Image 1 (spheres, helix red, strand yellow):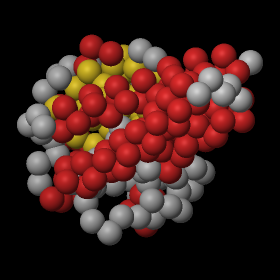
Image 2 (cartoon, rainbow, N blue to C red; image 1 turned 135 degrees about the vertical axis):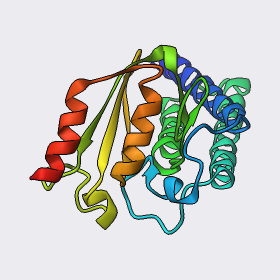
Image 3 (cartoon, rainbow, N blue to C red; image 1 turned 180 degrees about the vertical axis):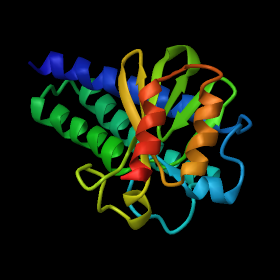
Length: 202
């Protein structure tokens, strides 16, 4: 039991550190979209109300916070391994901190790069994205009520090789610009266009 937990913690730690490094590298590359402050204000990972548009600087600070947690967990792992004290309680404690870093220290920046899309702590290359579609946020949507601008916005859903992810766009103009860029690289589902237009008619 302890050995399995140790392997699981190690794999999760390596994977998360890899993602942080990957996102850090991609942050240094030139943005294709969004470019203006207004565009940045209307596109983000999470639906809750924001006081300022997500920025590269803010993303870097978030990455540093995540990295600090990773070093803390790596130190704990090393101490437990070196002292040969295998306790499943300790590994569960490490998993708790990994989950905290993943869910409670989320990064809000969404940016289109030449080779893919950066979404929070995840980078998806175009070749790994299967499809993209936009869904209007209505009163029945789980994001409805998080903020006034999100209530009239859209959720962009991305299906990629290993699962799904999404982000929020609160402007139809920004959404159309974004999807036009995405269509150059990946499949944009036809129903997306109707869902956007129909939502404005209802």
